[in-house]
Image (spheres, one colour):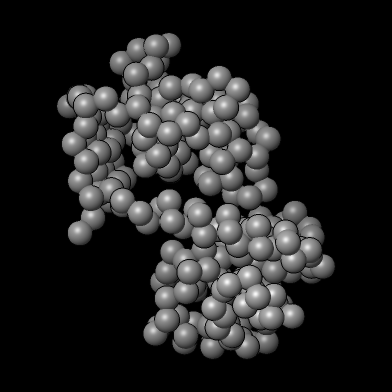
Length: 220
């Protein structure tokens, strides 16, 4: 059913009957997205997800009959990008696939190694941030948030998009939660956190990273 529906929607589909077979295929084929069932013969879906994530950044959408919060958390912690509970509407699954592909495009197009501004340097490969001559310690979540905004420099990014990109698809309404992280980032990278020059608020929308004077280095 999935194969027919996906092909009808314009996708090229490769099948794997087990986690082991999927990993074998990944050695020779680089898919744009993986639909992964949690209930697999042999290697479990969760273990397969971890192994795929260990070797590839490909978006992974989990399909499962389980609807418990713990199951979703385990899948997201294993590296899944999204979690769809069976039975599902095909239109919803196609929308989740499109969202996963958009996120993948955003993370790979114009990939940056570093971003150097007037007094701020972000080394994406080493996950290091320097303000002036001072190294700044960011938590992993703070760095991921800064990196996402920096790669969307100049574009307003909505609260929901940020939350789902950084925290996962189960998030979207935790605006206060996001404000806490943005405020922490401003305290660490802005000369005057109350009048930020890099992390600007877009009223009723989200946030925008401004790179006024920059030197950008792209991947080869």
